[in-house]
Length: 406
Ligand code: SF4
Image 1 (tube, rainbow, N blue to C red):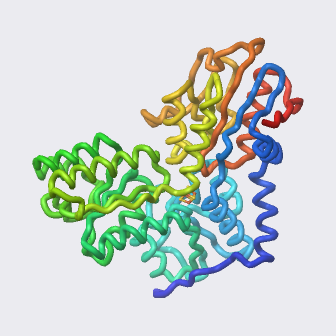
Image 2 (image 1 turned 120 degrees about the horizontal axis):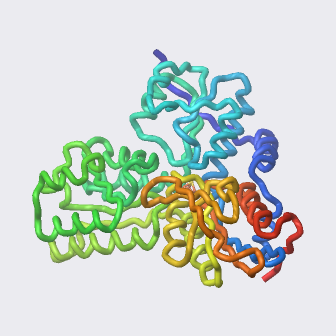
Image 3 (image 1 turned 45 degrees about the vertical axis):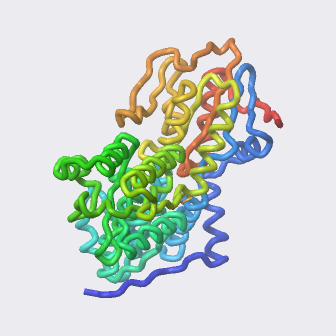
C-alpha cells in the first residue's frame, strides 16, 4: 500500500483564468451585483426588494469552488473525489457532481476510501476534515487538494495550543457539523487534549452549574454523549478551559457562552487564570450577520433567507430574522410555489414545511417591501432567480424593474 500522499497547488494563473470564467458562468448574477453596488433596492410596480449589503459566497467558499473546478481542469482524466460536500448548498454540490467529482462518503460509509489509488485526486472541503479521515486518505497515497478555509485553520491552531497547554477546549458548535468534528479532532493535540462541544446556552448553563456547584458525573457524561472526547472526566477536565467556536455560529450567542463560562471559572477559582477565550467567528459570518441587522432597520413586510438547509451560517441568519419579522428560509425559487403556497425550512424541527396561506402577507395591489439575504454558501444566481420569482408572482412579469440608488 502506498504510504505517502502529495498535496497539490493548482492555483496557477493560466488554470485560474479559465476556471474563474466557468465559475462566474455558473454562479454569477450581474443584476444582483448591480443592485448591491447601488444600495440594495430593486423596485417593480408595487414590489420593493431590498438586498442585504453582504450575503452569499464568502472568500473561503469561493476559493473552495475555484479549487474544485481547477482540479477538474488539471486532471481531466483522473478519478476525482470529494470528502462529503464541498459546501452546504445542494445546487453547488450538483454542479460539482456534474463535473464528475464523486462524493467519497456517498451513502454515509467510508468503504470507498479503501479503494483509493495513488492516481486519484481527493478534494478536502472548505470546512476541513477530521484527522483520522485525512490519515486514511494519506495512507492510500492519493493526491490531495486541500480547500480548507484559512479561518477554520485558525481555530485549529487555537485548540491545538490548548491541548499543548493541557487546557480543555470548549467548542461552541454543532457536534454533527463537519467543521466542528474536524476542530474537535485537532483539540486532542498529540493525545493529551480534551474537548467538550456545547450547542447552546442551555448546555452552557448545565456546565456553569457543574463548575460552580458540582454535580453528578454520570449525568454529565450522559448529557454530552457524542460531544466530548474519549476519557473525558468532568472532575478532571474542566479544571482549565479554553472557549473556541465553530466559525459560523451566532456571534451574540458565542459571546454569551464565553461570558457565562468565564464568570463560572471566576466564581469557582476566585480568578480567571484557568480560562481562555478566542473569538473564532469568521469575518464573513460576522459581516453577513451585521448586514442583516442593518437590513432589518428598514420597514420590511417579510424576509427571505436563501440557502442550503444544512448550512449553519444560513440557519443563524434565519434565526436573527425570525426574532424580528416573518422569515422564510428557502432553498431556491422553486420553494415560492404560488402567492398562497410556499415551502420553507423549519430549522427548529429540521424539516421543510409547506405553508398554504397568505404567506406573502399583502395582495399584489398593495405596496410591499421584501428583504433578502443568503448564507455564505449561496451563489448570486440563486438570489436573482428568487427575485425574479417574486416579481413574477406579484407583478405578473419580470425584468422591468428599476435599481433605486440609495
Ligand atoms: S463561512 Fe467563514 S470559515 Fe466558512 S468558508 Fe466562509 S470564510 Fe471560511
